[in-house]
Amino acid sequence: MIVVAIVGGGPAGLMAAEAAVAGGAEVKLYDAMPSIGRKFLLAGKGGLNLTHSEPIEQFLSRYGTRRPEIEFAIRSFPPEAIRTWARSLHIETFVGSSGRVFPSDLKAAPLLRAWLSRLRKAGVQFHVRHRWCGWDQEGNPLFLSPQGPQSAQADAVVLALGGGSWPHLGSDATWIQILAERKVPIAPLKPANCGFDVQWSKHFRMKFAGYPVKTVQVTVKAVDSTAIRRTGEFVITANGVEGGVIYMVSAAARDVIAAEGMATLWLDLVPARPLKQLTQDLSRPRSKRTVATHLKRCAGIEGVKAGLLHEAVPKELFTDPARLATALKSLPVILVSPRPLEEAISTAGGVSFKALDTRLMLRSLPGVFCAGEMLDWEAPTGGYLLTGCLATGRLAGAAAAEWGKTQVLP
Image (cartoon, rainbow, N blue to C red; front, side, top):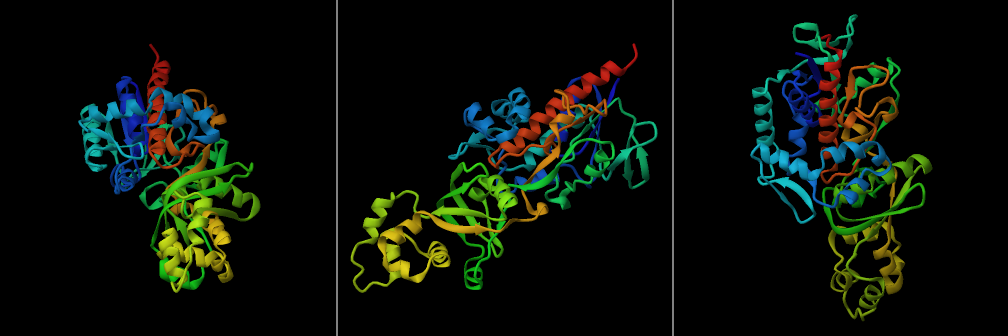
C-alpha cells in the first residue's frame, strides 16, 4: 500500500488525510503541537463558522484577485458539500441571519472529535510533537520528535502548515525557510483579517478602549481607487480598531498603507438615515438642550459614537447642522499600520500558485503537495477561510494518493 504523509493537523491537513485514505493510501499525519486542531478549536470559540450560504458566484468573488487560482478547488468542494460532509459526521448545520453557516450547537469541539474518531477508524495514524524540518538524505520528510530526529518513509507528502498568524497554536511559518532553500517561489506573508493602529488621543483611548461600535458602514478606497464599502460592527482598542467590519476591508486598507503610508477609514455612523434627513433632524431647534442631548435625540449619537465624533472634528462644527450631518455620514479615521502578523486572524502570501500544478503539487518537488493557508490566497472571515482550507486540503490529499500509486512499481 502506498503511504501518504500529511504534515499539519489543521483543517486542510485533516481533510487531506481524509481524502488520501479514501483514495486507498496508508496515511500518517504529523503535527508539531501536543494535540490536533488547536487553532481550529480556538477559531470556533465564539461559534464555528463553517462556510457561507450565498450563491456560488458571489461566494467565489470573496477570494479577490486569487479567485482564478483557487476557484477550481472551491468548486470541487463547495459550501453545500461542506454541509453534507458535516452531516456525515452527525453534525447538523444552520444558516444564520448573516448567511453564515454554523454547526447547530455552534461548537468546534464536537465536530473535531467526530472527525478525528472517523479518521482513526479509517486507519489514519497521528504523530504529535513532530516538527517538520525538511528532508533527509533519501528525500523522506524529516521530523524533530521527543525521541530526536525521525524520518518518515512516504510515497507522497502533503504540506498543510498554515500561515504565520497565531504562532503559539502552531502556525509559525518556519516552513518558509525550508521551502525557500529548495527554490520554491513564496510571496511574503502579510496580515489578513487584522486590526489597525490609530493614533487615538489619550482621553479617547482610556475612555473607550474595548467598546463596540454598532452598526456602521465603513469605506476604504483601495489602491486602484475602488471604494470598498461594508456594513457591520467593530471594536475600539487601545491601539486602534479591530473586529468584524474592519476585517472585511482589511486587505484593501493594508495594501493602501503599504503603497501610501496610511489609509483613511470613512465611517457612516448613521447608515440607516440619508444625509438630507439627518441634516433636517439636526436642524431642529436645540433650545436649552446640550449638544450631547441634541445629538442623542436627533441622531441617536451617544457613547462611543459621540466620542469618535469629538475625536475627529473641531468643536465649531457642532453648531452647524449641515456640516455636522456630513461628518456623521463620513467621519475620517486614519489607519497608521496593520497590527502585527502574529495577531492577525489569517495571513496573505505564501507558496505561489505558479510553483504548483493543477493538483497542487510543487513543480520543483514531485510528490510534494501544498494546501490550506500556506498557499498564496486570502479571504475575509465569514466561512471563506475555512472553506478554502477544506477544499484545497481535499484536492491535495486525493491528488497525493493518486500520484503515489503511479510511483509504485507493478
